[in-house]
Length: 297
Image 1 (tube, helix red, strand yellow):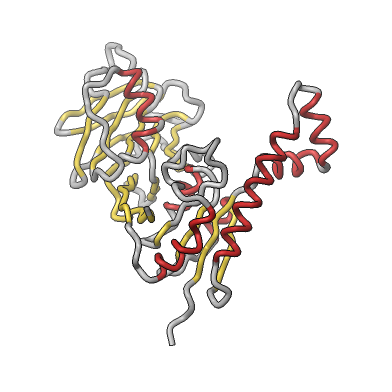
Image 2 (cartoon, one colour):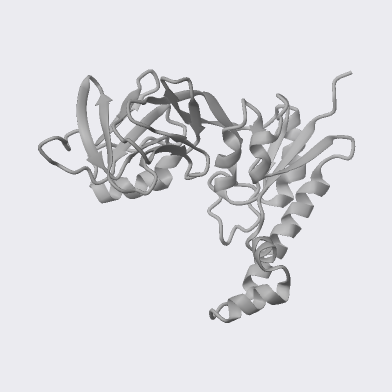
C-alpha cells in the first residue's frame, strides 16, 4: 500500500512576529512603533490575515494525509520527499527560497494578502487549496515549468537560484574579475553582475534592463534562456565596458573569474547570508540548471 500524500506547508515569520521576537511583548512593540510615528494596528492586521489564510490551508489538507510545516529558516535542514506537494503561504519570494531545495515536487503557491503581494509565484487564494491539493496529488493540474540558474565553481561548490545569481563584492564596492561570453573575454571593474532567469526578469533584472536602456530582450518566465547584466562597468586602461549584457541559451555558460583578494561573493535570489566566497582565481560557470520549478497554475 502506497503512503498517503504529504503536504509540506512553507511559511516565514510575519512582521508582527518579528517585532514580538525583537521587543518581547506587544506593548513594547507598540511603543517602539508609535515613537516613530507608526502604528502596530496595520502590522497586526496583516498578521491576522496571514493566520486566517494559513488556517484555511491547514484545514484543507485531508485528515488521512501526512503533513509538515517548515519555516523558511529551516529549509536547508528539511528533507523533502519526491512526491511531496509543497505549499508556500506568503509572498512570491518564499517560493524562490524553497525552490532551490526541491527536485521536481509540485508547488502550490498561496497568497495570504492579495492586496499587498503581486502573487506571480503565489497565484492562489487559500480557499482554492482544498481542490488544488487533491488535484495535485492525482496529477490533474496544469503545471508551469520554470527555468532555474546555477553557478558551479572549479573547487566543486555549487549555488542554485530561481530568480538570479549575483557575482561581485559583498559591500557592493568595485568588483574586479574577468568575464567570458560567446568567445569574447574582458577584464572588468564594476558594481557586480547578475545572471537572471525569465522569472527574475520581472524583478531585479527588469530594473537594470530599464536603467541600461538595454538592447537585449528579457526572457519570458518559462523561457529556457538566461540574461546577464553588468552593473556600472568602469572604463580604464586595464578594464573595459564592451561586454555588459547578453542573452544565452541553456546549453551555453557565462564564465567569471575573480580577481578580488577579499570581499568577493556569489549569492542567489537576494539571500546574501547563503553565499559562496568568490576569492582571487576562483572561476564560476553560470548556466541553466537541470532542476526546474514545477508551479501549479
